[in-house]
Length: 404
Ligand SMILES: [Zn+2]
Ligand SMILES: [Zn+2]
Figure 1 (cartoon, rainbow, N blue to C red):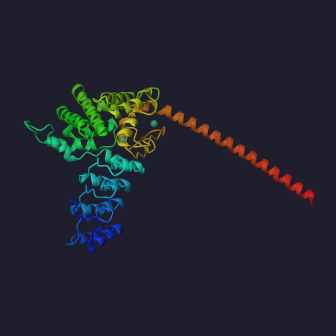
Figure 2 (cartoon, rainbow, N blue to C red):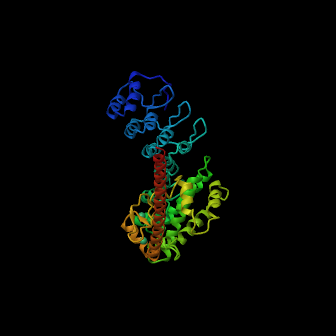
């Protein structure tokens, strides 16, 4: 679609590039209506208006250009950069998402052999890396909602595609969160529906591993989701308390420190069961997880999350102790040692947290007392050195006056 020659611009096209820089969407819209403006025209470096808008982080401008038929996969840039690469470099997750949603290819490499995700990682835009690595278009999932070849019915009933896609797109891999997502949608609440979803996840996992441009990250994610769904099916079949029992099992902490042992073992088992033993990612995960004794850092969840979403410093921000959602603000009012995204999550966790809450509170108080003592001591030291200085000054002034 990029038949335009580099740098061969009409006056209005030149104007369009200027307008993109200033961010005047209205004016850009007017220019795009002109006869002598091609939406995929190229500047002297082979950059399209969309590339410019993405690089400058102008979301509204990107939207406008895409609406006017901008080719998201145009690849005439002198160094092989795509609009998705520019979006990743800009650090804007919404624009990165927009490019992907418009059909941007993720495996194209530039002249130094880097993909968009690698470029974004290279400049430290980790949120964009997360978005790229976890993107799985609805269209790719919808393929399974149509009967293929001799099939009488599709592998995935069309009504399940929406809720399943929501689970696939989640960058929070906490199994509690996934079970809650399953629970919140009545369409997914039956073992047979979940089993269909699980099988589709396995098929996609296989496809990711066998396609020419193998995608181990996405394969691992699909496999992991299929494991969580399989667990849901087994709980739905065997237990009366539906998925609440599974959530409880995943949250239950051990007596000594409240560490959720079942959850840790479950995630380790999921990783181990990845069907492609030779995969580099699998070996890397096993190497990081296997030597850690249960209860120590890093947890299997943090290792898996980092490998799949590219999130670094996973533990820096406040995460909900129950579901793992980012930006949790509520603290347990007694121990102040655990955080939650809201009351629902705090309630879910209380059955197990109450056993260690008191202990955590004592630990915190002890810790605080210790650090207070340290401050007092250092203040005392400060006072001492202050009076030493004073003595010194006095002595000096005495000597000075003695000399006079
Ligand atoms: Zn939560
Ligand atoms: Zn507490």
